[in-house]
Length: 259
Ligand SMILES: Nc1ncnc2c1ncn2[C@@H]1O[C@H](COP(=O)(O)OP(=O)(O)O)[C@@H](O)[C@H]1O
Ligand SMILES: [Mg+2]
Image (cartoon, rainbow, N blue to C red):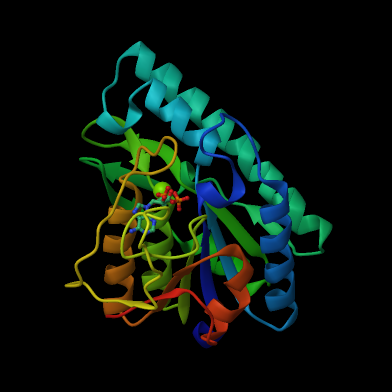
């Protein structure tokens, strides 16, 4: 595996599902993203794919308030159910990639990572490294995980993607978002404009997520993006139509995250 050819791509739950309708996939976006990955893979890129929970993970996790921790029988049931729905969504993502001959392989996040106090504590990337060395495309996801101090909690796909990119020394980390990038104001506001660059001190108005998000939405995503950028990864946030350009660092309407 050559870090210069390694990219970590995080497909937002808002891209691959309709977050306002439980258990609904956005097939056309999933097809567009899969085609971009197939092209990059064919050109020799090593790819780690992480996807969000969207309308599969978030409603279930929210129903049982898993993000707040706890270890009651209700929480145990909630962990099991959330894991079940995430596996279903993950299978759909892997299927789309396999159809385009991308050797995608599911890697269950909750089997390699644990949280403590609601934050990622330990992650074991040995198997993931070996998969990349064999030209596989590991597909992970934001997930309900064991929390060493709270019972269970949520590890977001945004956090997972940033940590993997930093630990593996990836060239790029691409956050694919339904909104198509970071705007000066929540998308839909009258004078919202796409920010082509964003630095940590920039002032911007962040609104809520359209639908349910148990992970902190765009604010948390940006915190993870800055962490990766400061550690030498080129980080971009943009829409599903510009995945290839973001990975290659080519000009297009998306947001570049400055270290
Ligand atoms: N200033 C902003 N720029 C872009 N998106 C924003 C902004 N403020 C709020 N949002 C909302 O953030 C959401 C994206 O975050 P999130 O739902 O966590 O994405 P993901 O699909 O990756 O989980 C979008 O639904 C968007 O409407
Ligand atoms: Mg999110």
